[in-house]
Amino acid sequence: MEAEKPFLEVCLTPALFYQYDVLQSIVVVIDVLRATSSICVAFQYGAHCIVPVTTTEESLAYREKGYLVGAERQGSMVEGFDFGNSPFSYMDDKIRGKKIALTTTNGTRAIDIARNAAMVVVGSFLNIDTLAEWLIKQQQNVVCLCAGWKDTFNLEDALFAGALAEKLQPHFRLTPHRDAALAAMRLYDLARNDMYEFLAQSSHRTRLEKLKVDEDVLYCLTPNQTQVIPVLRGGVLYNLRDMLQKDKGE
Amino acid sequence: MEAEKPFLEVCLTPALFYQYDVLQSIVVVIDVLRATSSICVAFQYGAHCIVPVTTTEESLAYREKGYLVGAERQGSMVEGFDFGNSPFSYMDDKIRGKKIALTTTNGTRAIDIARNAAMVVVGSFLNIDTLAEWLIKQQQNVVCLCAGWKDTFNLEDALFAGALAEKLQPHFRLTPHRDAALAAMRLYDLARNDMYEFLAQSSHRTRLEKLKVDEDVLYCLTPNQTQVIPVLRGGVLYNLRDMLQKDKGE
Image (cartoon, rainbow over all chains, first blue to last red; front, side, top):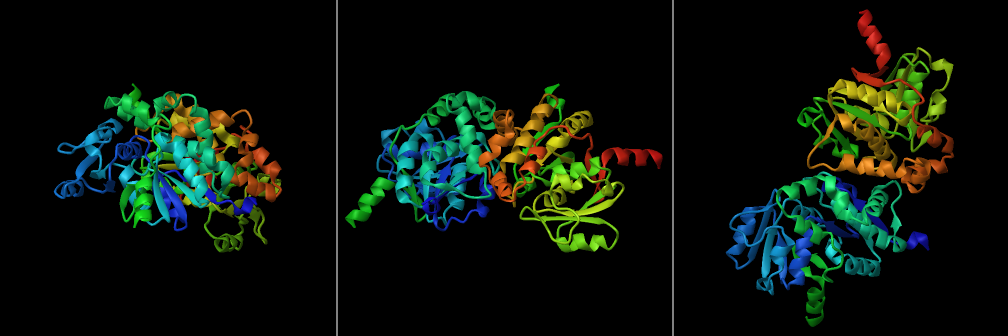
């Protein structure tokens, strides 16, 4: 029986993603502080779709097509955009039914490199239980892709990967020769009672502290604020529920 | 004052090594199970030098020049060689004064990719305190390079990086934007009281269990069995003490 469980893997940074065969896998893109958290919030507030784009210029070009546009660089909102990377900036009824184009330092890039996977979904503490339950049902290999910071490892994405892996583990098997999932679960287990404190020394929290976005950090570390699962189709993120309803309707 | 301390970094796998600027850094190559442990033992038993080579063919070619030759592939000694990768195979008076050519799956490759660093030394639990004291005296940036397993992350090398980083930390500063050293220290702190048990689920211990080399694992996790520091010069590893004496004599 054990041999028939699908594989569960954790990729600690996009720079290592080439090592994973994802054509048959669901990739969970993780950028806890803050891109994938904000994307979950945007769908929770009714966004129709989110187009992840690589450059701020591309993002602005979408504005001319009627999109709301978001851009974050070095942790701050770029001037002239509707949103930055704060989840709170997406808690607004003006986004209901809207199309959004978004570029962030790490998160949207990670979504882009994962695009050839069998399926790409977006994970954050905000939708962790809904996502875990759905992943278990799919009975397909899962690769948790930590967006990190400019291709380097970061702690908060590893913690989320560990938290998700812990929930998935009974239904999956770990890949031989690879310890990243184990390490992520161990780190999460250390941090679970106070992730905010655990991250106190981490590079990204230090970076965000300077930007005075402590409330963002606290919110992004709060599990189960939404039941949305953002999913990539044709290079565009949709709310999985909307997409399934549309598929049914067609 | 803080700003004047040298940097301390941990590189979690050779695949990420390109992200580190090592021209001004001392690189500590780490392949706890078992290459860098065995290298320390070989110098402890009086080896004159060790040439890290990439292929078993190269290694054999050195035999014709009078070298003892070692080769490990997939965890086992390759037939026709004098040594595999077990530290115990180097505990032999026949190696006193001898030149050795060695190829292993991960360790010698990691030494090779680090060769452009200001200095390359070899670390293992067996020489951890001697190495830490020496590194602190150098007042130079340090990058701990985990050899991992075929370019992927592994737990035992991260534990050693964490153990070493913990000893070095008061004298160094961590690089902004990078959490690998922090993660390694956290993992080591979890594991410190029983590393053998901590690694029980890890991929490499599982691999080595199948090879019945539990004694190797236990030995490789035992701190401070030797005071040698293997150091790379001109592509060849020497015992730092021998090299300094030679430099003095010349």
